[in-house]
Length: 223
Image (cartoon, rainbow, N blue to C red):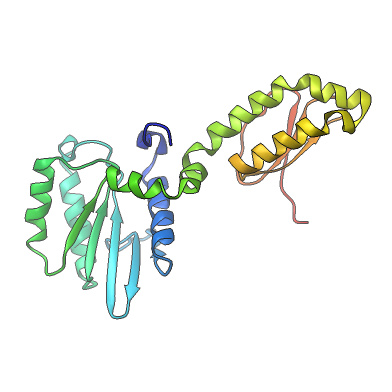
């Protein structure tokens, strides 16, 4: 993950929520994400353990709460909505790490509820995501690695040309290596084929990226 995660590159609260829910589903196999369309009741993710209900709420706040007059109000509104479900705990998850003033405010807020409140910031997220790099790769670095592979493919035009002249045997070791790298680094790429006129055919699922010249993309189809 290089020098930490660039949370700004996540780009939206919805995508951040998906990352958090995927992590929580990995950490707690029986937990589930709540679809927030129409109101999520102050819970983006929940876990039932017997009669207990544990709730998580994600807020895509990159910087200080004081940057917007509405942030504290939105946190409290989510908390009040969740309190109606009588949870055993409620956890706020943000990419930002609360400072002392924000932590004091949150602790004061917690004193008004009969269940414990927790705030998990970017340090907690990175500590847990470090154990599951596939989650980071899936949501945040797949496109960058995909583009790196495309640059490498472009540099291999000589190999492709060799394949068109001398047959697949001459270039297959290199192509197989690139195919293996694409499978390991970018799960969206599933097959790679040389084209008769040069370039590569990249068959991918779930991602639309503009291809450089002499590289074409084919949509997925069921086997």
